[in-house]
Length: 88
Image 1 (cartoon, rainbow, N blue to C red):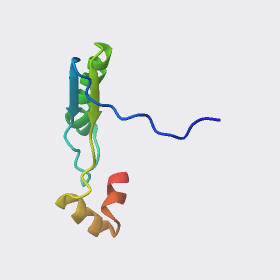
Image 2: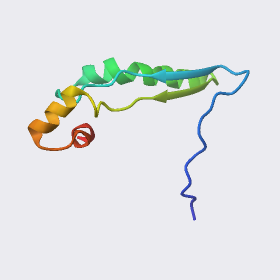
Image 3: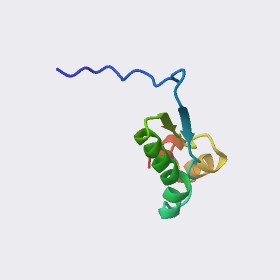
């Protein structure tokens, strides 16, 4: 039976090159297009892959814009929650 526990947290390793990579949040109130991926996510993802291939202790994190004004406004227009807008 497989374990349902989550993997251990990724922490800085003393004496090693530790890299934290983040990216801009894509706006959720517009129609998604290739520019969203290229401008917000793709370059950071490629850099993270490069760092891992080099053996660096790298972590790539991003998030959603659930608490931004544009997201809240769009959620009110569509009569749903900001989380539902971001999930969509």
